[in-house]
Length: 169
Image (cartoon, rainbow, N blue to C red):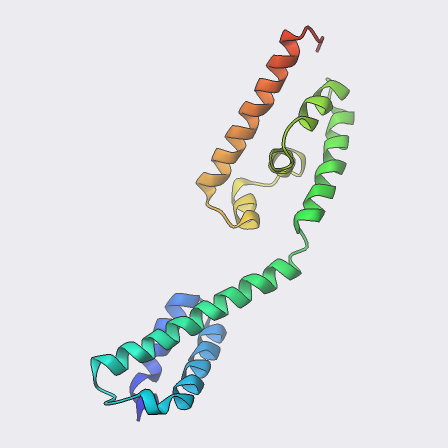
């Protein structure tokens, strides 16, 4: 009776939450499995308490599904932190070698934090767009723009410092 009463509503709720039909169906199944295990905790199927209980279980199953998806993507993502660092080192060498300012720019870039180097290499070395960088880091487009802006300012400060030290460009 509970399955018939809540199946469509829960499936719709889970689909809106997860954005994936298969994941929503899996979470729905897991929800009803847990409800069967805890059938003694279910009272009147039409009560607000029962409805809240069922939706709380569905929400927890959706959260579990999202966490599992994020862990899987982190493991299977070919651009993990070590790969980005290696790409960054290779690309910064390539950029340095091809830049008219040569080693001087490379030295300036080496003074940046690894995070600043990585985001600059993704943007200018590998020519990723801001949206791709945002997806990679799991942050918003605005956050990418802010990080790039800060990295450019830090780079400019290092260059200015070297100029004040009297180093020739």
